[in-house]
Length: 542
Image (cartoon, rainbow, N blue to C red; front, side, top):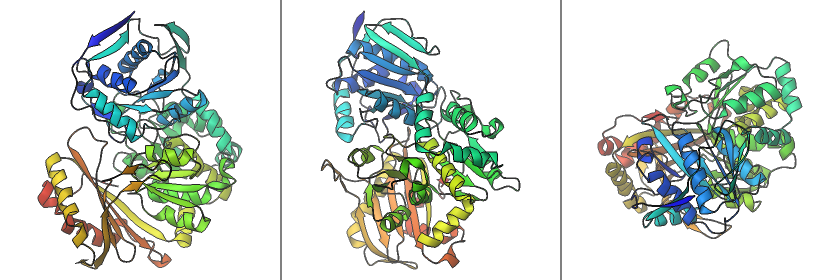
């Protein structure tokens, strides 16, 4: 039986770059979760009888919301739901399931790299039929609908046994609980030379992978251990936990410090990697070398032809605006298109669908290709392993060779997390108001060449996205970017991106923060960060 339940609009259901993210107690507010899901369904047309994929990263409240979403999908007219066993489904695996099954779309339940637990973060994101995140026109429609919503529809039937693979009927709808790993693992085997990687591992090449008690544990066990022969003892924190073991499932040098320390130690494995809460981000560390996400994108693009899935070369490369220009130099040498987009994977979707790019990435540890329409943490790890297996060099040697050929881009991101929202907005406004007066200004050893607020003109659909970040360009190739993040759940996060291009190999061994010191000082001079935020240091330096 279907019920229609009255509900009052919630004013704060505006999706960010990756869906709606709030603290768990907010989603537990009576009617809150239902209202947002109903707003999604009400913003869509033509899904009667079609398929919907549902899954999440296993964080606290994941199972409860999946049961709600299944019942609401039935009441709203979907014909079939595919849900990952145990409620588990990595974001790239969900994208693949949508595409493989020609589903109408999917609900991905995750707050990505944010912490989980009864008082921590939760999120709901809608993905469209190409497997990618909903574009802005849909997320804007969802928010508009949420502001006038007065009811939601839900079916009454018993909870689905999410732990039992099989097909069930309930509420006039077919419910399939599917293995969350196999289809994705099979796809990876078509892209990469698993035999070459197995031979590399068999020759004594040691791999360490930290799943951070998040969604990729089962995927790493199947692919790295069972199919590629990596020692199971080298897969750390492989069991997904509702609170990620009390840790922050963000694969950066702060939250993956144990892996970093291992890789920098005297008995380091040959290659180390990690992924995040929902499996779409990656951390790459060779023995004695951390590879920044911006560098990793450039190096993967330069070497992708070594993997079977990319042997014919690239159609183009795309990066988010805050990501460094390292990939631009690869695109120029390869003679392929280079696209600079706003932050948010949905902006890559049009380019990928139109065949205008093959590999894309963001500085926030997201890298992917046209195999799905999401960033993909394990994909990046496997492409690195494929390259290492073919070149038979260390990760450090590959990095050094790349810098020698293309130059090194010193790059860092300084995050000021959970700062007072009004202060963050005021800081950005004060910089933006003075953009026109910045060209020609000297700050220390740096001279500003130009400054702007980044606006993106989508080359496929002609849409325009404004106010995507403030860019300050200096003579000689250095750059500062100021941006407020849309992925947090409390306050605002100010992100400051700094990069400096250095073509001289003799200057490629500097400490990154030291090399960027003139830019760090320029950022303070331009934004008066200490005065505006009351912070004398970033929360996180990446």
